Length: 391
Ligand SMILES: Cc1ncc(COP(=O)(O)O)c(C=O)c1O
Image 1 (cartoon, rainbow, N blue to C red):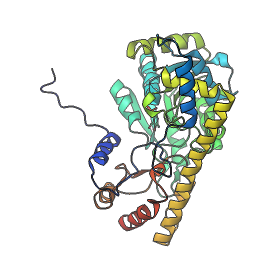
Image 2: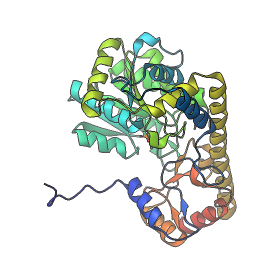
Image 3: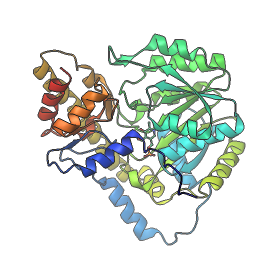
Image 4: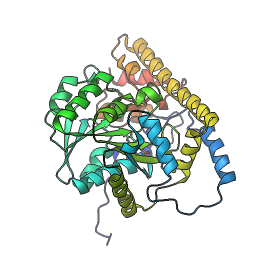
């Protein structure tokens, strides 16, 4: 069956991971893949996670199946973390998924089943797996203008003009915070405008929440999705705990659906899980539940998450400052204003190739930089290389 098949090309981020691993140079710098790194260049297991795992190891006496939607305590903790008090619990259906990618997939496949003619509107640009999954499912998709490369901010006029064309029942895919790849986030006024537009047109917002706590803080980063949940009849949410709990490989995610048909939505989500993987992974979800359900562990985790956010903000400021000195201009000032792990640095693919080949600095081909991959040691060298290559 496979002899004559051409396997699909891995996407650009996965390809870059392979190239970085194969590079034997000692000074290579990985600013490609989206993982957090400490100032020492490590992606550590968070102390709160270690402690939660110890408790689970001691107390857990069975590894039997849980349920098709996963652990209900975990889902309730996620509802509370993301939606707070914005909407009553009896309006939110949930299901555990393998990571945020699994959640994106389950939401899109569910919509594809229930509303096959719906178009999914994605920001230009967006995380490459969004269009990849939409295309894999055979859904219709359109892009809305989002990033303004000239200012490093959002093209608000273009975005709202494009969204005005979205039809009733179509999805608008929004990044809850820390937009990937641009780092340019919607402000509360923008969320308000999107909510009003959805109320007027019947478009359904689909919020991908992969970086809560990496932008301005846990509560601040959820303000947009909470505003939508408080004002609209239906909101679809895909959440990931990969980054904010550092649980990347455990595959912890959740679908949350704000709806007036909670019981039916839960049945649909359970059925969708059953067809795709049956039971979602439990270990990481249990860790999250343990942390969010315990005051001491919760405080420890919040402190660690705050520390990660401050490190990323510090990297942004330090790189913007080093680039100001290297270039004598404020051309890269937008770096300090962006939020989360990523920014588009404004490099062409040829410049990205040169950064990698000559300087051993790895960025994604569209010029996306993971600022969390910087360390105090590498910032001066990266600034020099950027100033030289992007001159
Ligand atoms: C925008 C966005 N959504 C979802 C995810 C899903 O992450 P994971 O499947 O690792 O939880 C990511 C991770 O890179 C992301 O950037």
